[in-house]
Image (cartoon, rainbow, N blue to C red; front, side):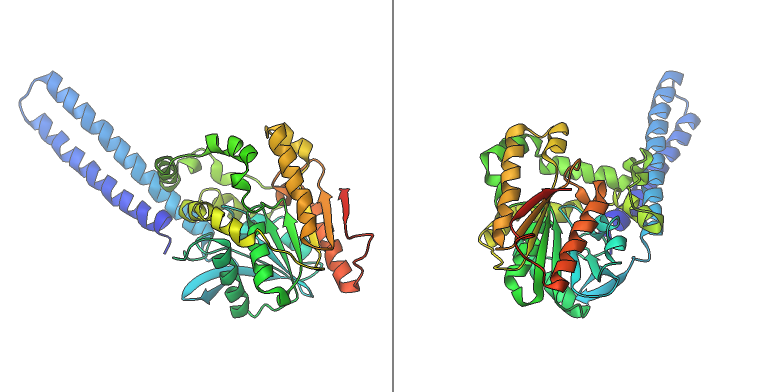
Length: 374
């Protein structure tokens, strides 16, 4: 049951209708009583304003809930029962190795909708929603890398998705695939880190200086969630944002997801970042290839990232090549952090090249240890 976006709006509608009726009845009785005109007008105006507000809020929350339900149901792709909870995964294409797409923080598997169709022409591709995100039920477990990797492993077993796997993780998802690869190395043929987070980056003084002023209190997060639940972003057009490279029903789903954020799970993942960092700090992958796909430093500087932080971030990205004796880095020209949206053809090309080299056994000095720009 989608409690924030179905149950809560239903309660809002009931409460607001009760307030509306509470305002209407006294308003009628006021005009029947023989009181001064001024007092009657003042009281009536207050009741009318409250009634209009309650009715408007009820209509907005109700319409938003119905609109979200209409677009989101039935759930796209397949739901699998994992440890008593439903998890969504979409697998397309055929061939080996199978690409497993791990979304970034606050994202669902839909974030890959601009690249999954093209990657599916190369090999089998599976994207999924982590517990508590998208169409996957919330998990009571701590949302650290260990728990998320174990859940993904259970999901793949349930769906009969077997190795060899190439794990593709964006941003925070990069930590989760590193954890998975260290726990189940026999299934993993390679990793692709798409502008991945690095373990314990939040403890770096340069990162802290940038991130601390941007953090908000739990009260602000609660207010943000309330704004989304009652449907104000929909009123402002936030549910119709176009995404380059995403068309048809996938485009409608991605747009709708902008009005269906999972605040609670995302917050829990952020709170577990320290644990996730410690769990993945010493991961290494021997000779299995690690493809590091990084944003363009110039693009991030244009978006307001401080030069000192950008230099630190570039060092983190370059350092990820050392996770394997066959590290390969691609800097995507003109792209910021969301590479799967800004330059999907480049991401498809580079992941496809890795798949081809794995099939041919052609991982050599022309690939390993090389940094290039595309």
